[in-house]
Length: 133
Image 1 (tube, rainbow, N blue to C red):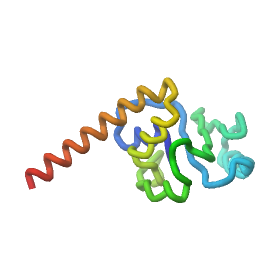
Image 2 (image 1 turned 180 degrees about the vertical axis):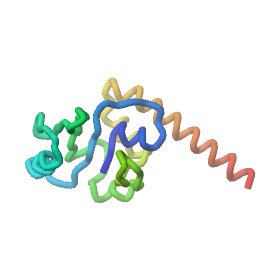
Image 3 (image 1 turned 135 degrees about the horizontal axis):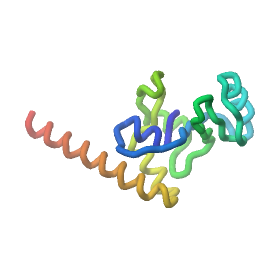
Image 4 (image 1 turned 120 degrees about the horizontal axis):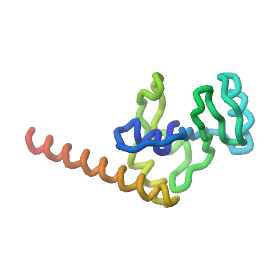
């Protein structure tokens, strides 16, 4: 499942990010399985949970996400969206926001503002649409 700012950008957040975060439904100790798949598609392993794709894109494999429920529970909070030409499960903005608010790293503070702004705009648009119907 795509998470983090890549997932937010796919959903319309006006921000940039250099890496891709993918939440894997495996125990962390099974990171080797993920590395093997990454190698088969041409990725270069940089660390247990980091792979660089052939275009230089860093991909972080996440096995546990702070502030969220289990992978199975959060899978219900996804949409299938297009990402690099494929339709994949993408964590919804509200849940990305929840995780970023929990972690609250310096870089997350700016991301939180951008995500909240987009969610506010969407709610306002939905209200206007509902009132005019």
